Length: 454
Image 1 (cartoon, rainbow, N blue to C red):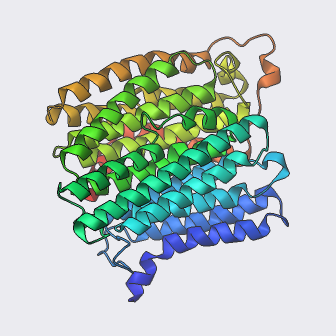
Image 2 (image 1 turned 30 degrees about the horizontal axis):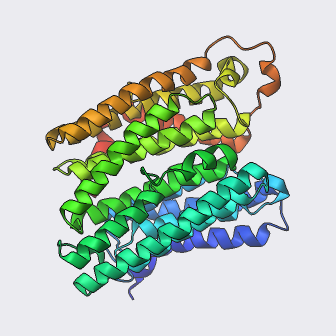
């Protein structure tokens, strides 16, 4: 192994070290100290990713890719992990939250570099198990229900992924993802099973049932891992698999059908929600659907469109979840007057929801442009219609919640407002910058995405 190969492992090693150090500190130090140490190690991991941008690939092992796509996924996963770390709480007196977030981040880094079936499955399961532990930390009835649903479905998903990898190996004689192309009988069965397992991780219909309960019943940090860390890394893994397209038409049709169903169902059900967290849970199902439809449609800009979309979605969902964490089980009515009592929080939730709706001048507008452009270029008219209907429905409910933050407060609203901590304020400021700057000047983000696509 060369020195460059060892350096390529540094982000994964630093994320793992952050988890170990945070776990050792949990019974000894305050939550703020644990978050600071874990955050510093994750920042170091992010610095390594940034410093290695543009350098020649130097994979330490064949099963871990070190190309631009792996680095992009690692950087986005670490950024998402840092965002979740800002609002993780010591639920029930437990201070293992930062360690679990770091574990999930390490899983996301590994998943982004997965070039082998074993790494793909291990990366997914590391992230999922950390999410389960975060969900159960409060030991409340709602958290237990959400945790049991997630754990049981995650077990079925893991078994499905393992069986899919076994069929792919039987059909091709290899566990390397690049060798899983073709549409022979065994590979097709393996592709269908792999798609079903990944659809659960990506919260696609009909494997989405755990998401709303997780967002509304579990700690917000668990929702952050599911909506940002896991989603970003899984999107990168799906893009790498899409280059191979195991199973041929089965993969494309299955991904397209699940994506269209997620975009429609997620947005339609979100329309009826009054709880901020539950609305975000259903809407994240819809955003997974948009990403799946981009991959299913294919075309020359599909990869670029997916990377742009997930890059602009991550800061939006993290900002919205940070406000949900600060307000504690907020409904749309609870958001009224937020801009007056906490201008930063009000601006953050408003801009985050406007970005998810895809309106200018936010970065979400660029994401929606790429979404519709990719589907139109591929002439995937059915998928384009599903995306357009979903986006139209989402426009209504996002604006309902966003405008509430600027409305006059309820008489007892002052009792429900909470001042965000220093870490949360820092995260919101960074999120606001990432929501505005790419919308006003998108060229750097577009150039980065174009250079990353395999």
